[in-house]
Length: 287
Ligand code: 3HC
Image (tube, rainbow, N blue to C red; front, top):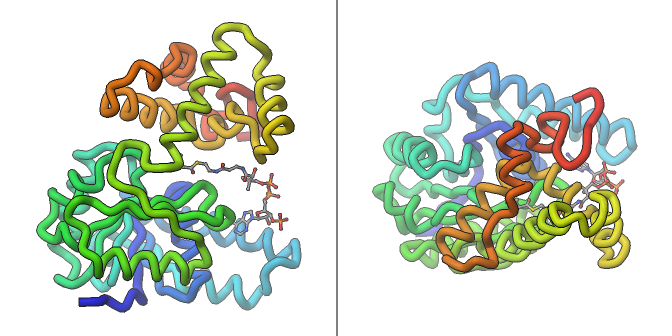
């Protein structure tokens, strides 16, 4: 049965979850934005308001549209508020147990025909689907950071994902104005399978003293026409996230070429996680 997706719950109101909520609300969906506490959901809503206000200032968004978008996003008091959703997408910490716990609750809350999706960058969709009672209605919907700006959504079919679920989700992604690529459920999917080894190689290059961080980045940025160099991009994504994906690729694909650089491990151990902590390969003022 094909579900009409009009109300979407987004679980996790961090950088990715908030961005996904914005994308959905901009496309006219009603969004329920949930996090571990009502305060976190409320703060994320305020932050979205401020970021949309900047777009209004720049003349890229009408003030009335900003109000309408914000009005369609409701911060949740608890996960229970997600019950009316036709689709719930999770964008929380990359931990199978924690995600499974949330999906178990959503599975019990949502009506039987509703769909479940994960924005995971590295955890098996098949394994997550298997923790629910609706594995055919489970899918990977991987947004790129920042979701409102990036043109791609990677759709990942788990072993159990039904054709109807796949059709509904690709249709929704197109309604969001995104281009879809479809990946099998293999660690890293398409984008991170290519991106993380690139970032890891840049870490090895820095570790070996091949060049400075700035020159490695400028080499890739101007030499390959990438919008950001790999180390700047790693700081933007979060070094902990990059390391965790690199570890999954190394462990699950079992090849030495995916071994995370020691430098990346050391930075993460130091708490130098990139922009979010004010320091990664570069330092960020006023954060
Ligand atoms: N909503 C709508 N538009 C927004 C926005 C928002 N919340 N935030 C920014 N924008 C718009 C800006 O208005 C601007 O539009 P313009 O070009 O028409 O003026 C545009 O987006 C770019 O924003 P900025 O001017 O602030 O910044 P930059 O020009 O420096 O671009 C960037 C920033 C888009 C992040 C660019 O540097 C970039 O594309 N970097 C690479 C990002 C990337 O590779 N992401 C993928 C990472 S991999 C991933 O996510 C997978 C995960 O699993 C690890």
